[in-house]
Length: 164
Image (cartoon, rainbow, N blue to C red; front, side):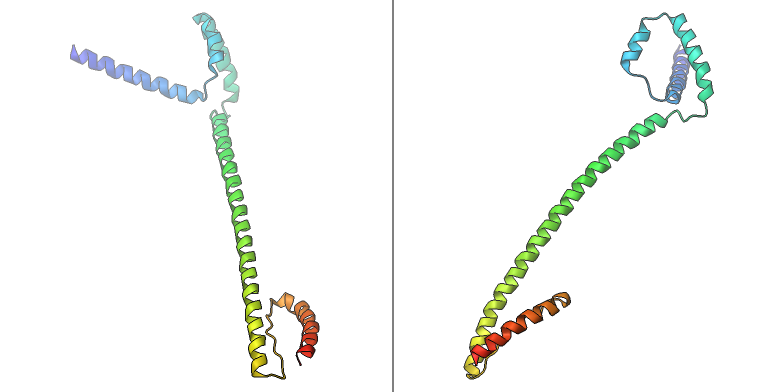
């Protein structure tokens, strides 16, 4: 009796595996609303309908049956990647704003300190050379050199004349 049970069990497992494989070969299943419609039909009618559908499906045997599942999967991944890209773009924008803000604060601090040092330099130079005048000038980047030099030179001459 134990052998019979083991044989039945192995036969049922084999059948189950066969049915699972067949279900996987079918691809995606229809929505439950469509399945409910077919529950009302008799088995002979369903069998005839399945035979007709299978005959029609043979025309499309070359088509990838899992293409729709792959399409849905890839579309979900694409949506997730686009969402992550938006998040990363927003983060990059915030980082750029922070960098710009810190650059502005750095420039303001440099200018403030330079003005103080320049003022002290003029005072010390005046004490060391009573008849002369000195001015500390900061040189900016190469593009700004031409514009700054012209503007500063005009102001320097006026200040130098008043200092003498």
